Length: 209
Image (tube, rainbow, N blue to C red; front, side):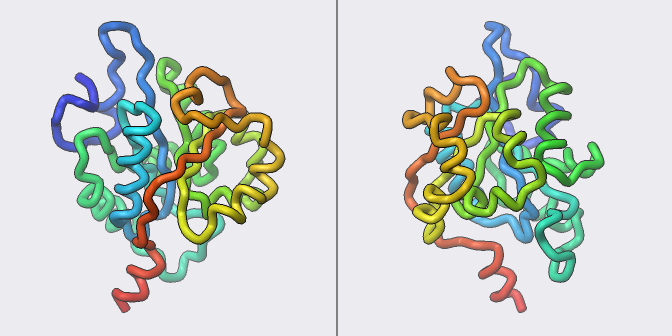
């Protein structure tokens, strides 16, 4: 069974059987609070699926992002349920993996997943806003060395992100063609120019008040 079989979204644990032709599964990881999940997450996932030749995209709903305040954070179960409703593509799985693994740091998540699924090729998906904030992440340089990274255009952060510390430190590891990312071992990252989407969790929370 592959993610392109047309079945409904399901838990990540049911999306990982190897292909019969021994091809390695390519999975994009989109982490975040999903507070709430919205069409912008879907927009990035769709672009990643097409441009990176992915088999699946996992939405890793964080129990609690260490860089975000707990105030205003919806309960985990509610955020996970909303993400599963929004992520209605057959190749998307909104998961509670980080909660079940007991981790909140991205590098910890990557290391655990690569050990648990050695036959899978992972790529970390993020918007340009997260690239600009990367130096605030726990052991962010080690993260680049642990997993491929794909950065997606997001207004108005892209120019600042590409001139920032993370992009500059790993400038020689940047791959121009997104599909060539799979032919490089980490550190390897690419910037993907896509049509910008206006949705944001901050705006949705403000409108909900």
